[in-house]
Image (cartoon, rainbow, N blue to C red; front, side, top):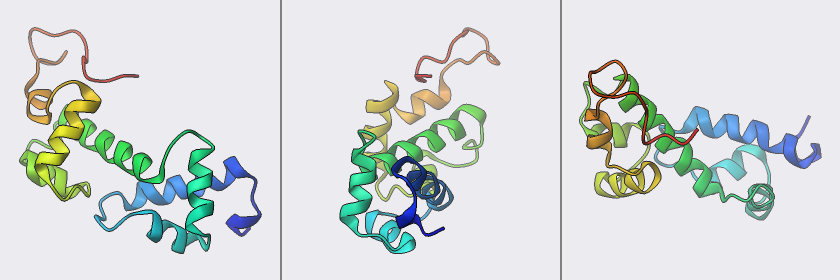
Length: 130
């Protein structure tokens, strides 16, 4: 079924799956997504606005969450913060750190190094809003 003939919320599901699959691509953006689905930028933005988001905001939040998970579960252990940010499509490590701190209340290095339930001295995940 072409995406243009699907109801609004249903139209967003395949777009979000595409975004998730392409998060590591730094070129991922509204134009790429609109082209992939054969819809106009205006239509794409309207789909996200209907859910109170922007396209760029949804991409950014999903990238931040992937980075948070990598830092929390040790998948980022072998990578520096800059490399982790680049891996998930952020082109500037300083900007990534600022966004991460704004979202999770601490910088990525502090988040990675904080005590966790598997390490002594912690019983919660202070940076995650569930």
